[in-house]
Image (tube, rainbow over all chains, first blue to last red; front, side, top):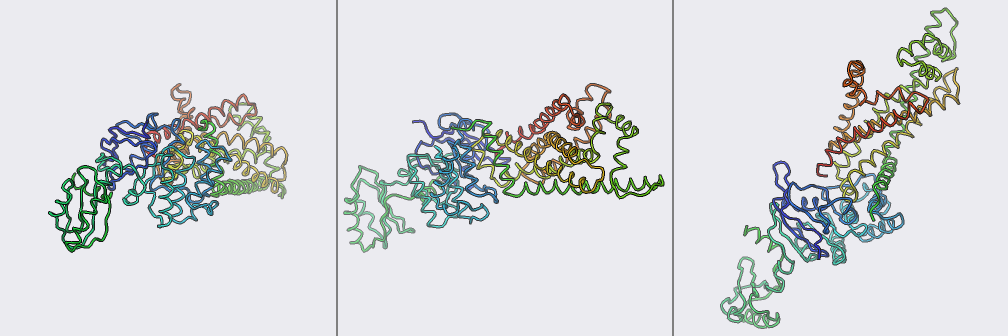
Length: 307
Length: 300
């Protein structure tokens, strides 16, 4: 299957800053893809290059198998929520979206329908005739998300989509993104890692313009390969290791976290719990929480420390 | 299916014109043209009246309340015709000019002088400010840069027509109410034709305005660059016109300025007007291209 986009050895220099330093990355079609990295890691630059808003100094970029972005080939197929960009303040949001839809090749009536549809998705149906200047920060963010989904482009690049959204609207946008799974390729750059973890199925860590790691979210977060138990007291580590000899048991005293790395043969979760939990209770420990797998933040921070 | 390049330009241009009215930029533009035309025409007639009064006083004739009669008489004298012929160096064109009413000729001078300046004031910021706030980024992944820039060019040129027609109306109204020697129908027709010709003349300046607008993200700097460009063209035209004829190479700078074609537009015959109009449109594109070339190499 042709990837949604693939970049190879991408280099981009802004005066003295090297934003991308040989980045190579492949984003599968239909995935919801998380881009994780510190400020200045190159996430925004990557999105700008894929959407044709920036030009690489070196390297290859192939979008939907048709080479680097060009308006003739990709307009209407690739969409972006650009960072730090504001539509004209005096403009009405339906006029703007209609203009964008027409540029994507929609005729008048389908354009109007598409505008209504995407405004409904982001709960702005009652603000159709509002001017940009009348929107709150959160509403403006939702409008800019709506424009990215206009006309069902094949690739949607969202740069910090949750920034400034209240909890209800953030949950709505998460649901919107989940609902597009398999229908569009959605790439999300965000520093809110637990949100990425909850919606994305693929993840790439980028630092200093290079790819540190790329894999499925389940793999990166060790979903099904690690059990975390938040406990009180000190666990009998030697006893626990005897009970599950095929797996590695470790205890992080600072975090009061007992971790069981499922390194050997696949084992039913219930059988591990059946062995470990009674032993912990016998030792006087109390179990506060059991979580399957690690989390994205933990893995990202570990990855950074390991550099 | 993506719209064709022509359709894209049309979509951009229509949006730009509508946006100009929604943002009241167009209203501001129309008001500038109308107010400028009314004020300048009134000023012209006041000046004309003073000259006529001084003339009547010198000739020991009775003062008259009617304005324009003496000017119109002088306008048609052989002396004025001779002076004009010295300037335009063509009998037929001289005849055509003196057949126009003085207010029409004044309006021609006024609009040719000030329309480019108003254009710089209003249009130079169009691309610069959209790049500054980032609103261009919502558009430029949906369309080519060339069609976006061409759409801006077409829209700004289209806004010229109502602006100049309105300013012509202002000049006509001032003439109608203040001049004694005034042929309403003939002057209206003259002003209409002159307005259309000035639209063509200003095409080249639209190209300049959109061209400099692509050079920077600062709307103010773009405006400064625009005015600098107008001044540079005027100086180039004046200097190269002075040295014209001394060598073929020295003619080239002159032919690259809009001023070189201004007089051709005054002719009544299309044989003179059309080539000049084509050259002015081409000059507009020529002034726009360096800015486009630079922006096309930059990140958006």
